[in-house]
Amino acid sequence: MDRGYQRDFSEHSPAMYRIMERERKAKTMLAILSEHFHKPLDKLSILDVGASTGIIDNYLADHFRHVVGIDIDQQAVDYASRANRKNNLQFVVADAMNIPFQAGEFDIVICSQVYEHVPDAYRMMDEIHRVLSEGGVCYFAATNRLKLIEPHHNLPFLSMLPKWVADFYMRVMGKGTSYYERHLTYWGLKQLVRKFEIIDFTMRTVTEPIRFGTDYMLGDGSLKSALARFLLASAYWLSPGYIWLLRKD
Image (cartoon, rainbow, N blue to C red; front, side, top):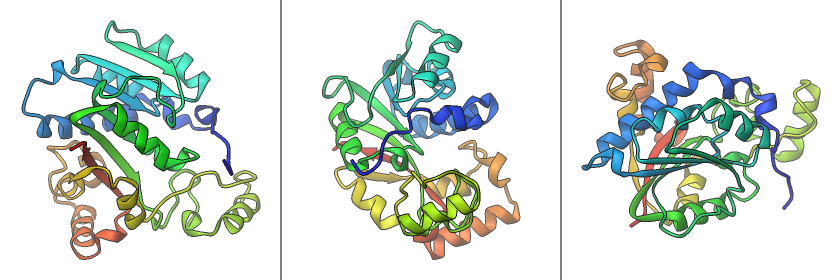
């Protein structure tokens, strides 16, 4: 690998511990998964790849049969195990590129804002495909490389730059010695998930923000919501991010 793991990601990311923010994401996941499945959710099992502190999984465990969260970050998993105790909830230190579960073991896999942190995102998606049951889905939320403000370091244009320029930019701005994350464009993301059927919820989370729990970001009927709808309709490839269900056909 040409880059290592972010084994201490939670230590430098206070957002991983913000319960309200993480539960908002979980509510959107629940709304989308409820819309997709035509059977009781409490019969379904979930694997969360990149679970971090487990706040999202703790919320989902109230609605699904069994929830397992994995992460390479030992500190985050230790916290998750201490803070979130439910009989149907489990946390494991594990590698997203070598998931320690049997083929077809899960009905749902969560992969939310994770692909850019993994040394080999293609290998991770192969593993997700392997552990999904036939007809199962991966909830895939991903940021576009062409997003103007890079979301992890809050620097303009950072994700668009060549690696050596991005590394220099990080050092000059006092954000670190190297830019670890590797985002993909819309077309790169399509290639990444090529083994799956894409069920696209991106537009619906904008046009139906109350239904899908995204109104805290957009505001139903707001100018921001109208601009987001216009962007998606006219230049979908420029969307700051995407929410897809990836179905294993």
